[in-house]
Image (cartoon, rainbow, N blue to C red; front, side, top):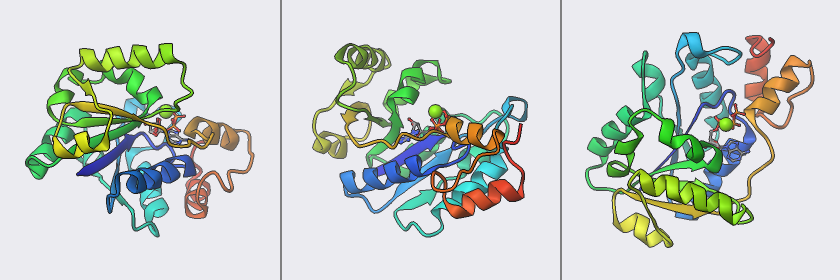
Length: 212
Ligand code: ATP
Ligand code: MG
């Protein structure tokens, strides 16, 4: 079973790192791969380049033997999509199970991802969601995922014994931190010590990222 945690990671913070560690523990796997998405230069806006986001991730993961960095989307360059990575991963894995992990915020946007209707033939989804989430909200998300061809699993065993096509909600504690919050603090000239690792904080400072 392979677990991939995708995101923009602009920048990576301890909420991401902690969640990826909990995922490894929860699924009893030796590794979780963090896979930052490519960002077109014209889309970068206030954000950092793909290269800087990769550099920050590799600094953040340096001493974490549970987490690895999958650079494929950033290295592929222009117009790089998750669907392409899923096809590649599927070829690499044969009929081994693949799980793409994401929070409910990302999962809610999934139908608008490029070729999202192909995802259920390529991967499972692990949705990190608080069980306190209003049941109406969860029901709406469930319907969206079912429309994309996924069916809900209730046990981890189901995800391990099949390769693709299922989603599961798992309730893992989420730290109340976001990259938006970090970028805002930097813009305001405030400290980002602790929510990002020391090495990432130093990199942001040395490269004057997120100043405006
Ligand atoms: P932004 O504020 O720019 O949206 P973000 O902190 O949400 O940044 P993303 O790169 O958008 O980070 O998210 C990548 C993945 O990490 C998503 O699936 C998201 O649900 C999840 N995630 C974001 N913040 C946390 C957190 N504090 N704890 C656990 N997971 C998180
Ligand atoms: Mg986000």
